[in-house]
Image (cartoon, rainbow, N blue to C red; front, side, top):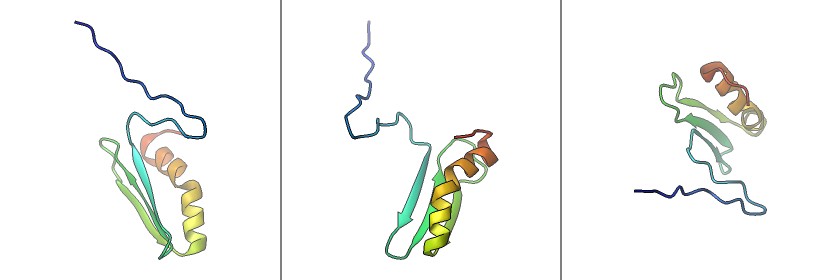
Length: 77
């Protein structure tokens, strides 16, 4: 028995579809807030934030993925 592997195709102007979601960055534009949720198995800190206010949200969005991956998963983006 043989099986076929389904692969995501690149579409011009769109990012490739990830095979697995490992984190979600949520940004609320009405109340100017943001949080990051990590879905990696065994993550010691599943949620970062929330942060509030325009300057804090901008800084949080710019650095959260790299900071979280370095601190809890030993990775650099």
